Image 1 (cartoon, rainbow, N blue to C red):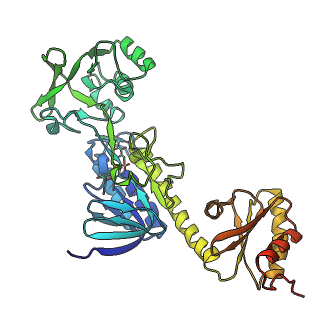
Image 2: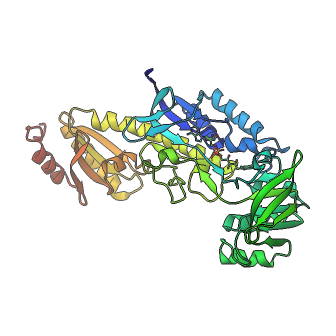
Image 3: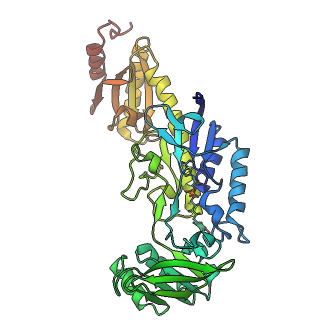
Length: 420
Ligand SMILES: Cc1cc2nc3c(=O)[nH]c(=O)nc-3n(C[C@H](O)[C@H](O)[C@H](O)COP(=O)(O)OP(=O)(O)OC[C@H]3O[C@@H](n4cnc5c(N)ncnc54)[C@H](O)[C@@H]3O)c2cc1C
């Protein structure tokens, strides 16, 4: 068997939709050696939409792919590299992350996951002929305006189906809803259900699922099947909106990254996942609104957070792991009065012992990265560190005596004797 190639990058981005492309623009601009790996279409789900009407600053309703092509061009101009292949597996533990494709192992200091998801489809006959811009839609926010004055059919009765269906009534003349349950039973919350049942533009076709789709070039009829008696009910409509779930592309991460029960990646506001150096952005995240505008915001944050992470890691190694001397670290907060006093004391200690110890100041007001890595929560604190491990920490009422006592107890090398 042929040996796999190994390539090194600062950042590997998995998934080339709007979130990944934006991360590529930001990483490239930060001069990080970056590669974006995409398994299908650069541009992701956004390429399936024939008109993007709601992306700020872009007028004249361009096709989704026109917008994402520009994003790709911008990322390339910033130096981001691209590879068209599927990521098959990842090893995200440790400092060097490994991203495996068929032929290559990509090693990276940080990984940004932007693999998005895909709408669940019904699997009914002829469905693939009408997906996306041929009459079957999955996004009311995106396609409602194009259905102004028309008759649309909604499939599903969960929160998304009913809330999006209500939204569609602001544009469409009639919104029919196919519900698989008995009359009056829906999967959505009670408030949405009551509002929908009272909405004069909405009507419900109970005990039905989709049997098949029909049309010439564009969808014209959805044939529903009654689950009780098997009758086929043809529903002539201009568009069909399917809201029967969304499947996040998170399978390859599930054993390493914390996911919600539905498979979305949990992140904090910096797009950090549970694994250090691994970020997630866009539709794959557990979030409230999945749109191009929110995906690009996520991508920008993930890239900046990755850049900061890499810089901090490098700093951490240079300042804390690599020095041969033991390291005395002051963790302080620049806007805290007590911390400001501790800075003066720290200066005095450094003056006395600079031949025997390395001295590092960490301002957590700027970033908590190094303090987090050391597991130090309190400030101001003086920490004695050897080979990256904390030996002792002093907090509260920090004095020269206490510091000298700590240094002398841990290092019986005579070095704590003050220089005359
Ligand atoms: C029909 C439709 C119309 C829409 N219209 C609009 C609209 O008008 N306005 C709007 O704001 N939003 C719209 N949206 C929503 C918008 O497209 C998404 O919110 C957006 O694309 C999310 O971006 P993303 O980068 O997070 O994920 P995606 O766009 O889903 O991109 C993820 C990418 O990751 C790739 N990937 C997944 N797994 C792997 C792997 N293992 N290896 C390599 N690559 C992988 C996928 O192939 C995909 O290209 C629409 C969505 C749909 C379905």
